[in-house]
Image (cartoon, rainbow, N blue to C red; front, side, top):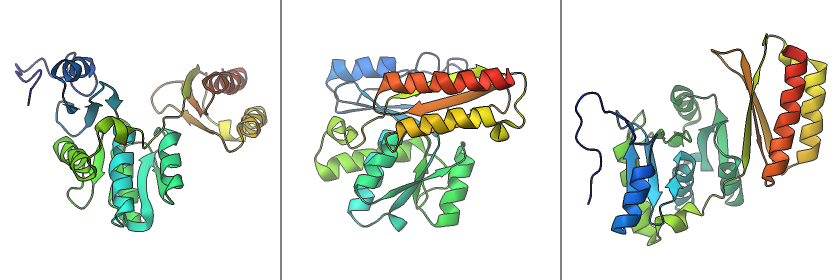
Length: 247
């Protein structure tokens, strides 16, 4: 086992390393021919993994890998997990193919935990790598998650890159729209018409997520569909409608 960036001096936490900067880990995994690389954040409640090819394995991938393993073994209550609206739609598709379900909580691990407890579920988390295994802990634990991921690799005999393919990431387009005001947007007919038109164009092959920032004068428009160029165009069209009405 090799360790990287393991000499803290009090001011170098997360500097060009860890789950927010995994590039050096990706290079090291390839250099050493490792089967698995694991990066944590400063307090190690999050994890981003790297497979043997140097590909990133984010929180969505990890929930797919561990969740589908539990589902197939009959150990996933209600055949469901909890994620947030920022998780890739490919995660939902992966569970739907296996007869499972992904419930969506408000963004933030506290809301993920709240919905898990309300519905009696054992697995939930965020794309950022904050994963909760409620039968072991009530918060994210990067070390625990790494062990759970390694256990699935050991149990299935599959490489991490093969397990990563359990979830096919849907192309995403995120547009930030600066506005003068955010109130009343849900009732704005022009914005509603733009969203309805976009949903009709996507059909069942994608999704749209619109969220006003809680701290800034802007809206975030996220569109996912198999065609990245279409996702980008739809996100721009909705963004233009929001800007025209509220900007």
